[in-house]
Image (cartoon, rainbow, N blue to C red; front, side, top):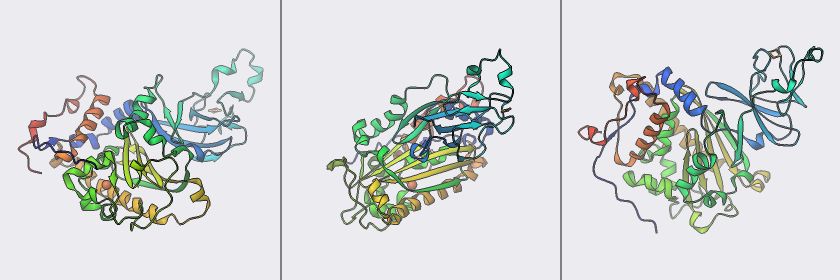
Length: 397
Ligand code: FES
Ligand code: FE
């Protein structure tokens, strides 16, 4: 039996970020450079690149990146920029080539490992070392069946910054390994174009204060999430299904068989993990829901949400709509709330920010993390440390 935590009584309210952190193009540019272009960024589902030559292009911060699979079957990622005069190499977001990537401008041609293999008239330039003009590689790791990219020259520790998020939430890496996420099959993907800053989406995902208000279907399945102040505790420690609930579906009806490997403790529970900056992983006994965000502007974020099931479930043609519909509604309810909040970020009413109630206090840690990434001493007063916790205790919610 899980014990509900006690909630500290003071300070009851702490400050959020000021509104400009959600609207200011300069702050967003700093986030692009120091967060999305500096940390590990979950870019593609590896199985989407199902054969050599399949490619996807993704926007990471200010850079376009092409991810492909080489002849040996390994994922490769490169800046989507031709080394000749800088034309964008792949123009489509999804595509397939036979053996090479050819620039549409002057036809410089690169193999699937990024090596320059042909260019008009280049053979006559005997002083040119072709190996110096390959595509610029991007660091790539595979985890959970996704390609995680890092544009930094020296990436931070993947184990600490990515896998560490799951360990922090679940206690150890074995707990997520048991879901076998990399071996699951894609049952459904929905792409949401959300007119809101990426941090509003993260903050919303990190709290459950809103669950009782906007997620009636979710709280029917997970009654603990309707428990206002304590709900947050269950987000991290596994929220139990209601006694009458048969599965994680929109009406609580039965889902599919438990994934091989998960243990009794994980059965009939929902776990949520935020992997900063842009990934949410949702674990339930018979499927996994993984969100990848692509922040495209201060007020626009594209979210790709994948529903992943045991391969035999997808192959059988089973009706997935009951489980897909549950989280599709949750997504829609959440993103609607974020879109309702975004316009207020530029209001004078939110110039100094708002407040977090105790069950949202952990979001203050996220805010501190964001400020640490973008702080440049002496450049912007908006980046000064947040008010001390006591500073807002006199403000009414
Ligand atoms: Fe690509 Fe010239 S810019 S071949
Ligand atoms: Fe929600």
